[in-house]
Image (cartoon, rainbow, N blue to C red):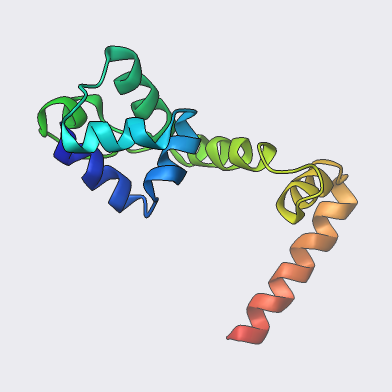
Amino acid sequence: MKDRIKKLRKELDLTQQEFADKLGIKRNTVASYETGKSNLSDGAVSLICREFSVNEEWLRTGKGEMFIEQSQDEQIAAFVGEILKDEDDSFKRRLVSGLAALDDNGWNVLEKFLDSIHKEKD
C-alpha cells in the first residue's frame, strides 16, 4: 500500500505536507506510510478514500481504477465544499456567494455576458 499512497499523492500533485494538511494529519505520518514504517489503519484508508475520491479496492490491493468516477453533481458539490473551506474573503468564496444570491434576471445577464465572451473567442 505504501507505493500506492505515494503514487496517489504524486497523481494529485501534492507535497507530503499538503497531503497531510488535507487529511488533518502530520507530514511525518504520510512519510511513514510511504516508506512502509507504518501501516494505514482502516480509518486512515476511509479518510483518504473519502477526501480524494479514491477507489478503496485500488488503495488496498492495486486492483481497479485509482479514482471513483463522480457524477457532475458530485464534482460540483466537492468543488463548492473545497471553496467553502477557503478564507472568508477569498475570491472563489465571494464568487460562489455572489452566484448564490443571483435572481433569475441576474442569471440571464450572466448568461448573456458569458455567451458574448465565448463568441469573441470563436
